[in-house]
Length: 203
Image (cartoon, rainbow, N blue to C red; front, side, top):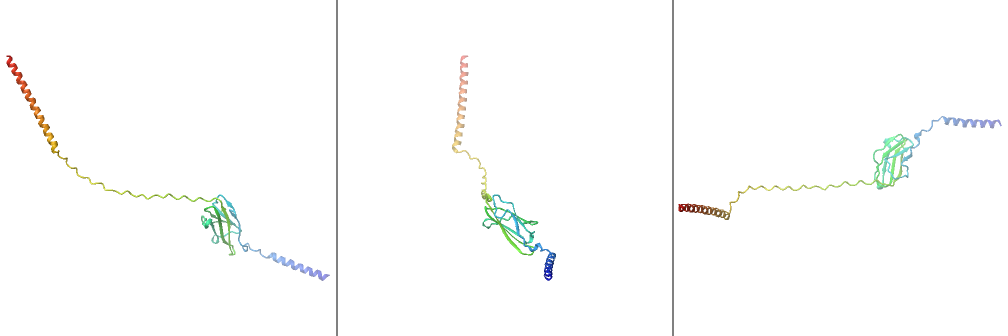
């Protein structure tokens, strides 16, 4: 009976010693656990009528900027990442450039502190696309009107001499006036002579 009790006591002492030894070991470093995604905005599987300005990813541990990569692609694999990601503690955000309505995929890749690479993605759907910008109106090329040389000015020609017919008309007119003047003078002389004759006969 005494031996049995002694064996049980030694067994319990051994168990307690092992437990005490384990308790003295340092706790496992958090870096031993791989980093992982804990949340996002928008959430995975969300359907949005209005596009967000930025996409945010939240992780279990703080990601490093030099080992973290985030891409966003839309319908037809069109890139929708509007710039480089920014880091704030355990959060990573990237500007979002929306395009057509449809499925958008946010893919991320980063490394844990132990160097283990981590990849993943979230997906959301835009129900309303961004309309394409209207094309700028094309300006028709203007063609300069051909310049025509001004016609050379000709020297003023001297006035034409009156035609012979006109000169003849002028000569006839001058002769007619001379005849009329002569007739008037003759009639005046006859009248004066007749008047003088009557006076002489009355005496």
